[in-house]
Each structure stands twice: as structure tokens, then as C-alpha cells.
Length: 331
Ligand code: CP
Ligand code: NVA
Image (cartoon, rainbow, N blue to C red; front, side):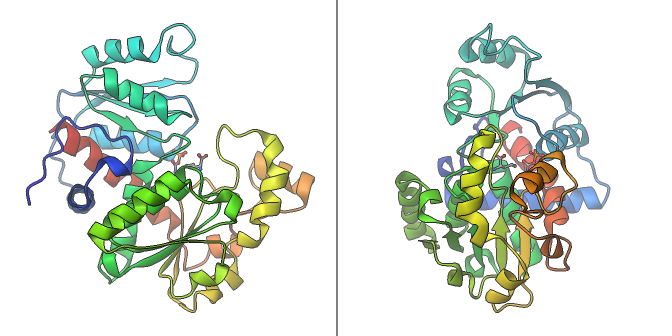
């Protein structure tokens, strides 16, 4: 089936059909092969991209910039507080200005509504570089990374996500896996499970793709998994005051050697969107240790640094998958 995503926004996974999602995964694979072979097609020559970051970023920003340069595009990056947007000029006005100058606009911020408003007023594709609710360039990367790291086809792959699954990564891995037809297990305390609307979407998609969706508190559900994912327990923009409660809720959901053993699969792979608090070598990691006595949070250093961990392959794949999104929507 032919797929054409030219001119489309990339705001959240549920805006895409399983066939379109699969197309983006295949395009990621193709672009990665090309780059490894030193082939640069300059598909975006003459294009200009605006990258707006209202929250901090290492991977997403660098991935957009390198992907753009590889394909011959230019980028302008605006960090929080360095433009008029928000405090002096509305989102709707800002995006109408930007879409007159740029061919595509990336946005990272808090509210999903902001990136949806941008898309409404923009004449050019808008790409969601993370909001509190969705992180679709990350889930695209993660699904691609699992396909790449496994001998199984995606519908045969099972994975669990442990952590705060109300937030972006839980929701995005749930829907991204549903679109891919995978066996997706969201394992979190009830208070941190995804909203009913997201779960309904996942189940609806699963009826088309054959995905298996499990939402549970039960850590035994990691049994047989090919991949274990987690994320930080307190996300960007959340107040520091939530750390105490979050640690209480998620302490038992730490990905450690015992948890990997519980899968019963010695070849299980560990994945994390990063950044990660797996040691005390960050300001926040050290502060949390001083306050709560935990020097490793969502994952132990042992697992993070183990042969099971593919987190840095996953991080590299952000660039290939983001390149696929840009190329698919602009050419
Ligand atoms: N995974 C991810 O989005 O990383 P950054 O916050 O560094 O962009
Ligand atoms: N849930 C994390 C993801 C970071 C890539 C956050 O929003 O901070």
C-alpha cells in the first residue's frame, strides 16, 4: 500500500494508521543504512526548519539538527525565553509568523494543546518534540530499535514499560506498540496508569493490528518479555515536591538485576529514553540521594551498564527516526 505523509503534522501516535506507522519504521531503517554507507541524498536542500524548545533537551535537539544538516536543510533553534512566544506573542500569532519563513516547525513544551494549536495555525508540518502527554519521535525510535535488536517481527515482540505511565513515555509506548501489533505490557501502580481514553485508543488499535495490551500493577507480567523499558520517575516540569510520593509508589518498580531475572529471558534487553538516574553523577541524582538515600532510581547502574542494555543504540536511533519524520512530511 502506498503511503504519502507529505504535509502531515507529527503530533501523537494516534494520528497515524498502522500502515503509516510501519512506513515510518521502514523509512528509519532505510535512512540508517544510507547514512552508515556514507550516502547523503540532500532531500531537504534549501529547506529551513525552526526548532522550539520550551523544555531542555540533548537527544531531540541534536537529532533534529543533525538529521536536518545530513539532508541539506538549515535550522534555527529557539530556546525557552529567547523569543517573544508565550509571554508577549500568542502561540497562534507566533506560528503564523514562523510558517511564513520555515518549511517545518518542531516544538517541545508542556501542554499537548500548545502543539495542537500550532498545527492548527501552521501552513507547514509541526513535529512534537515532547509534551507531557506524548513523545512520538521517541516511541517511533523505540519501536524501530526493538525491531532492529530482535530477530522477531514486531508482532511477535513483547515488551514491558515500568514507571509513571500516565506521562509521555508510558502513553507513547502503549500506542506505538499497539500500532506495531506488539505484546505491550504497561506495569505501574494503579495511581500511575494511563488514562482511560489512551487505553481505549490502544485497545481499538489492537483490534486492527492484533496487538496484545496489558495494563497491570503486577510485576510478574514481565515474564517472557523481550524488552524492558523504563523512564525517570519525575518528568520535566513536575515540581520537586512530588519526588517523595513518587519514590514510594515506584520503589518496587525499579529495573534491577532481579527484575530482569523475573523475565526468565537471559537475552532480555533494557531500554530507556534517557536521561536516567542510574547513579549519583548528576546534580539531581545526588540531591535525591541526600534526601531519600536512593543512589539509583528507575534503573540500577548494574543493569544500565550491562550487556543487556541497548540505551545508547536507542539514543543514536533518535536521529535516524527523526530524520524519517522530517523527510516523510517534507518531501
Ligand atoms: N529522550 C529524549 O527526549 O532526550 P532529550 O530530553 O535529551 O531530548
Ligand atoms: N518523561 C520524561 C521523558 C524525557 C525524554 C520527561 O518528560 O521528562
